[in-house]
Length: 565
Image (tube, rainbow, N blue to C red; front, top):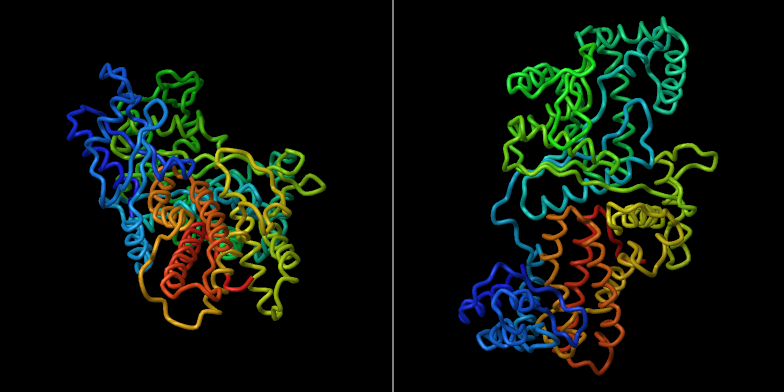
């Protein structure tokens, strides 16, 4: 239910009836119960334009505001705010509708579009490390969210598989006589040894470069070895994605090699449009207002990341037909994407109406405020971090219930992985954040465990309730009113989070919802003796709708719930 749009329409109608010319304006959620459910401050913005006192404008709007079905009360406050209260009967009926709907009343986009979400981007011939965590889970959440809202989402995992490193690996493979059947941990050491040879021996380096040419020219022997390296690497990535409950598959991989044949055409088309200039032997695009040009071809004829990104953008916009292309990549790449997007639009590779966005994110830090590393200063392997999360989750939950060994393994996985993901998704993605086990595995505060516990607590109510829910939802007091309105805001939150590519808006909503429900649970008995049947049925429906909303919200974040905790 687009709750806010219903309130906005009521305000708009009042403006029209009052004959007040206005730009599109929006209400905001009231910050305190005494201010109502929503607040409108547009009267102050209009005061100067209309030459009137803002309170006079606000009163004029209220005089023409239709009270009854949706809005039951409105009053002017302060210098010209309009506080709005929703009709409890209308709220109750909307909650009943949401409760009976498998989508909880959340509609799909009226004009769905095709969206490409580019995320994860692991390195080949290396294990995924903590630096890949944020791109992977933010991107997957955005893809989940847009899919739920009705867009056609194409997940893309752009990997670097077409460079000097692979010639280096093949050269070292032949030099050492290894058969290529190595696990990734061995492969990573193999890569380090090969790199050492590459840096120290010019003859070896030249041989590695020759192998790159062979790969790119289709040499069968080299391509077979190259494919082994890719398969081993992607197999590890799939293990990580499975642990993380991330929906990326092998079919979503679009590697650099996929765009290789189009790179000469990118250069040719830029030449045709007179966008290229030579600088120190390299072919560059000079953008207005930018000191540093976009280099698309080196003096030796080699291509760069920008060239591949332009080819990928053209493919995604014109072949896949995307109207929104989102790159979930480290904030340090902001300058690169700003330039590449501009070249893509100026060259016509991407139509003007296609939305290009860099969904930037900050760095994971340790408690000292430095980038997250192992104790000896090395890079933390992502698979090791996730395994540690499960171990720590066992410690956090093992004393709470009488679990079987199988149950504790299943629950610890759900709780541990959920804790890691939620801690990341709950902050503004552009901010750096402190990785803290104690905080993320707490039963209190804005954590996944707090959400999972609230869900499990509601399930315990229904295990004790022996019967069928029936009857109407009744809004009996202010706490029930606030909980019901919060539940109806779910769609507005999801739409805003999708538009802003901001998962933390969902986590903030879930935290506020659960905190409000816990107060409701404590102050409004549900199954307690003496509660009349109609009230009990009403509160059971509100509790059940709350649980369904928690579950759906967490599912969009890629986090599971448990019935007992």
